[in-house]
Image 1: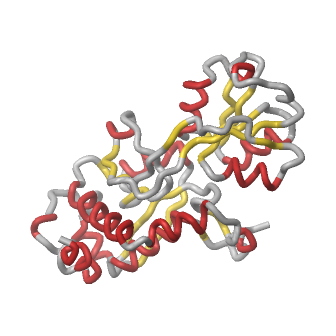
Image 2 (image 1 turned 90 degrees about the horizontal axis):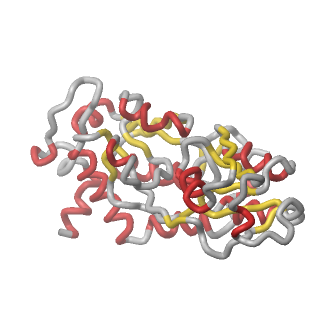
Length: 269
């Protein structure tokens, strides 16, 4: 089985195998059509350190590394299609790209709309709070109608806030940076976001922000997403994820982007 996994590098096994043939329309390309095109179209949304711009305006980040390596192993070019987070699943369904590789957490609700691969990363939701506004707060104090949480619109973090702090008001923003800025400016008490951004920003703004809870609000499993019925893509991506997990490449890239700040000098100021 291991030899089978490694043989996908030349595409001859998985991209052209009749075992992965699929009935599709012209606007929902299966693996054969993607091979003919020569480019894998990837939908993502920019948020640190999953995907962001460097000082030259180019996309960098964990998801970018993953998509580039996937395309390279598959003998394809990669085309990134940045998309607003709340529109990323509708854009996939309408065939604006072939796959979402963008820190999309597996949920039962999302599984009604898209087909998930096996997980390729495991993060979670953490909270960063304004020190002055929440001075002396207990966990219970955050669950109040007077408390404002900031979060990125359409993200799993909104659901996590509502689950743990149902009385609190949730301010939603299209950009995660805006959500954090609201807390830095004192317009919101706390912000919830996928790790490790809360941890990074509390280090960066230690005079204003802190982590009020040791435990994450939720533990997430992120996966690629394709359209419902695209079993050929799921099977191929599952094989790739398993191979890159077994050889340690996914962990090495995850650790670089999520447990260090070695990449920070590359980002746009």
